[in-house]
Image 1: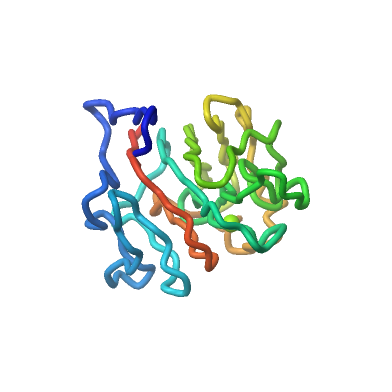
Image 2 (image 1 turned 90 degrees about the vertical axis):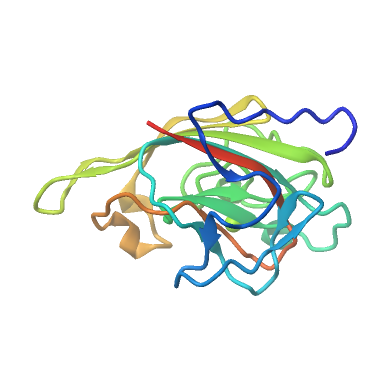
Length: 207
Ligand code: MG
């Protein structure tokens, strides 16, 4: 951590998903070991090694995750330091270097990707750490597979509210058609979009 950088420690009832040491809580989709890099206490996306996901499944939860985009920027729009946090492996809270970087509204950092723009752009300059506090309610399904209640999500970025109990509408999930299908608890997934985004201090509380 940089000088003056204060980590918010995991509460005693949280499960620590990454504490700077190793990727023991993570794997690839096929269950093989996660191939991202751990350096200087951070987990770093290794381009083209694939998304990683928690070994455990989760439903309703409070998730704390910190991320940092590379200081040296070249690309623009969605190609600038893109990653993402997928709740239940499906619903993406976008990660993007949105500092002075224009893109479509519902693709910004803090968006529910391709669904809902963030209320504001709270993204810090590249090289600085961003914090997501995510409070997530999983969708419920009826026995016949129809939707009983949609997923809901609240996201604070660096203490600023960017999603306020947003209802994730399965009918708007144009990108992942499978997402409207019934599902149970599922892993938290982090995206390899080919950019060396860093992560640290990841913990979760099941609700
Ligand atoms: Mg993304």
